Length: 217
Image (cartoon, rainbow, N blue to C red; front, side):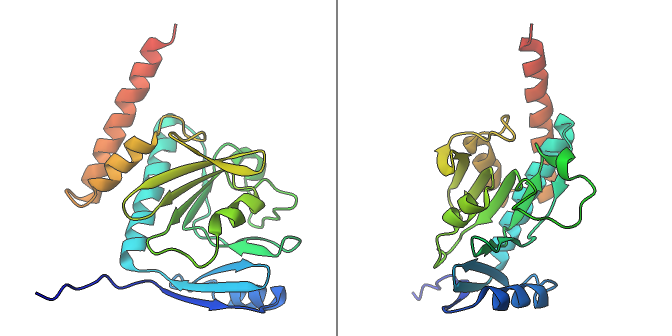
């Protein structure tokens, strides 16, 4: 019996690319969600995501948005907006990113300068097939406070501590969400419809917050 292997994401790695070239490409491809650019000091990776990649990033993004809604938190969703700094010669397009803790500081802005503005509080990275670049170090350098990385099987939560990521068992931006809870809902995504699963997630959030309120003296 012939076994069909899953198609790998298409990744192209270019070296010797100037910052100005990367910026022009980022601008030209801004409306093309089918190509993502990552830049690290002259090395440019161009990646075309697979449907599995897009499905997982969308579901994780909805978990974040639902959590902030139920908890009454404000949020600014920037999706895959390019995050970059010329002084570091680094740039990346997260699968999803959000301002939550620092939302009030950037409310109403449509342009962001990470040398002046706070970086997003949370980014989501779907890494089904390993990137040629060390994307975690890029997120670290840009000051993204928290990163969720899903490799198709497991979920990892990294929180920035003194400029370095430390793996943790629960979110700091959304402490009600542990790694096991997020992963549990992720793994059930193929069992029932996405909206039905999100209704279950919302109910879990409501029950969990109610328990916390009752425990509070």
